[in-house]
Amino acid sequence: MHLDQQITTLEAHLAAHPDDARTRYHLGLLLAEHHHDPAAGRKHLLQWLLDQIGHSDPAEAEQRLRTAVDRDRDPRSQLMLGHLLGYLGRADEADTELQRATRWQTRTTPHFELCTVPGSTASSELDTIAATREAGLQTIEALFGLGPDPGLRIRYYLYETELHKHALTGDPMPAHAFCDRAEIHAVVGPATRVDSIHEDVHIVLRRLGRPCRFLEEGAAIFAEHGPEVHAWFAAATRNQPAPALSTLLDDETFDASDLWVTYPMAGSFVAFLMAELGRRRFLELYPTAGDQVPARTRRMTGLSLDALEARWLAAARVRVRSDTAGASGAADA
Image (cartoon, rainbow, N blue to C red; front, side, top):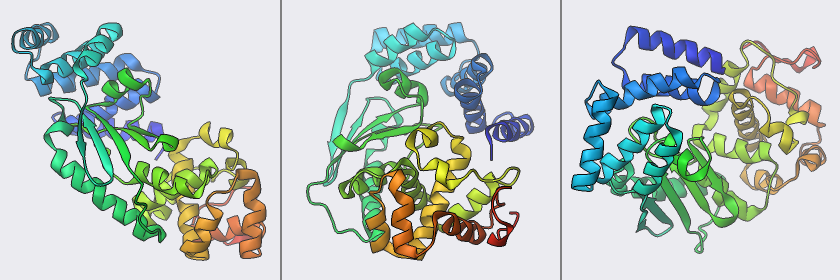
């Protein structure tokens, strides 16, 4: 589903269910961060936060939070104060308060270091988060047929919201990974909860080498969604053809593309390759630069990239581009 469609769907749902806090939050986030309408987005985010605090008036809420911070040194109130200022459009003050609130505490498990902020959602759910991360690592190893890596240790920094993460890292997305230093920054809070294995896949598979972005994100999306990613890709291209696979093998082009289409597209292609090649041969292909993918896949499958793409699109039942031969057999989703 494209961004405009998502916004329309969320607006309709919120109109019918005005007390749905998660819908209000995610509508506000999409408007503020991705739709170039920050004022409308902040309005929804502010209402969401005031509902969380239990106050209808922003000035009263600010005073209440400042009193709790100054008198009680309450870390959760400091986090909420930073968010309130941010959603009021007072960005510099918000950054200051969120940075003051962020004093990392670390929980160590066999393969993870989990860094949380006192008073945050993640800090209150560390046992569950730790168990989820360790179980997810086993899932990744089993899915790709990898043996345990005894030296693997992944450091997680967990934030309350996208605003909190943005203030500390400069990145507004729900999660991002630094593979070379096995470090992940992710939101685990009351509205957004990044608890899938997506980012962990990037870290675990990096031991194989550096792939092109299309295969890198495709492997993570496939691990996160499984074979259902084909249906997600088909839905994403219901109203427009899929872009050419060959163009997305270039990292800059992929990163500049419409991720609402190209992420499920990459996941669908990797799911197809895993079924077509098997785990061992897919892992041989994985650390391949984009300009080498056509030659590598031809050696592995005996098919040109165009022929392999047509076979995949037919299997995924995705509408074929107008410049793709109709003989591919792909059908409208």
